[in-house]
Image (tube, rainbow, N blue to C red; front, side):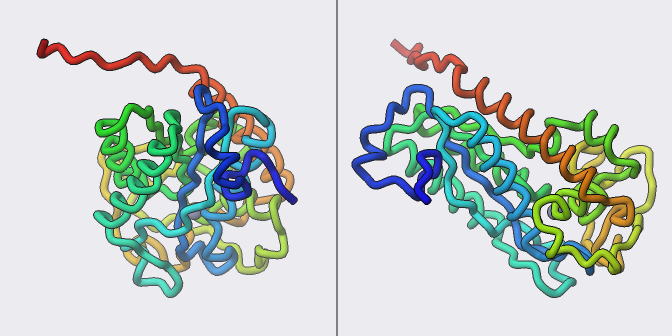
Length: 263
Ligand SMILES: [Zn+2]
């Protein structure tokens, strides 16, 4: 059924006639990659799309949701069967092209909502490229980081990283038929260090992304055995609430004109 918040449902005259002054266009961006033996490879796509859709439905006005970009940078996962990796430079150009197209139709508030940790550097460069070459503002967010405290309160695990308590709980909440409960594992295979750890919500001071097959046998990093549908419901609600809050603030952020000081 047609929904006014979905860009893909609109006709070109409807897009032309939108009041774009405060409209925030949200571009969900994710990846297809291994998520342990118990979750589907579409996990990041499923989660970010559901979170963005729920946040947009909550806000209702002045928000438009773009079709999901399903492929991201997953080169470090290619030792496992399943991932689809896009070269980083292509990814920057592809995302920047999508965002720039929106600016040509008059949209000026663009927000990339990312569901996959390793997309971050490419997403940031794409956003900067569009910011610096158009009059739009382009923000990037990985929504899990908006609810760090709540995620730490709801989850029992020390490490919130990949295919673990957080992601498994969220998929259980959204569609439990996609989770093979018996195959859940706990695996924390990376060396524990003062300066480096794996986290979807807390960036370590020393950043590097090891090849996944060096730090995980199962593909899981964290503890999937602690996941539950009940935790997923709570996690989903709080992340959606924070994301909606961020979108509403972005909607009302003042965009001042830039001024050329050469003359
Ligand atoms: Zn994931």
